[in-house]
Image (cartoon, rainbow, N blue to C red; front, side, top):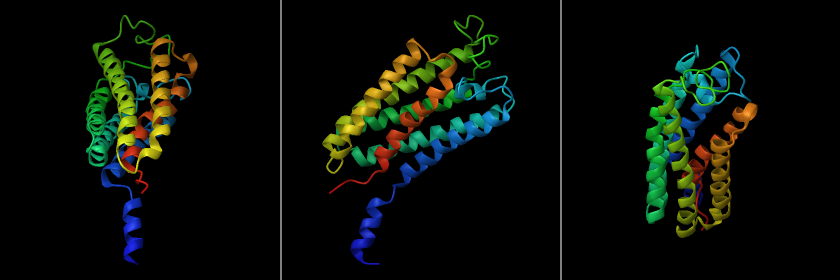
Length: 221
């Protein structure tokens, strides 16, 4: 293998933090698929992923493991962003936001819902007047986590624009930033009823996946 070919291969190989990030988030989604298949009465189109780790979920341990794996993945992604865009202030801020979001993922996974809030029979349904403190911790921590990742998406727009070799990502970065913001507002203010689970999954895939790709994609010289 020539020196030029070896250099090209090294440039296009994903950095270790990005690979760990991808593995962690992939484990989260794999755990959600397995747990959903094992949990009686669970509907992926209606129920959110958090319901799989609820107190009444018979296989909650699998989903909690998925949350912890995602936490490791996001923290590692923050490290990857710091290495790639850390020469700019915006890059440092984006890396910090993703890292904090990863830490919050641990709390979101351990502070469990009582049951699936999509079901009228669940104490977490609607206003959740009878819901436990664990449910509310999960809700507010998850919301903060989402807001941090959305904020990181906006900061990454500036980071990719100001970092040499990554300007080609700025259009995609803007679309993702404004798209995830719009969906976050819609989920909190309006909701999607029986389609909450259907909307949540691609939303999370983009919200978690974009920082990983930003930390992994090779620059264009």
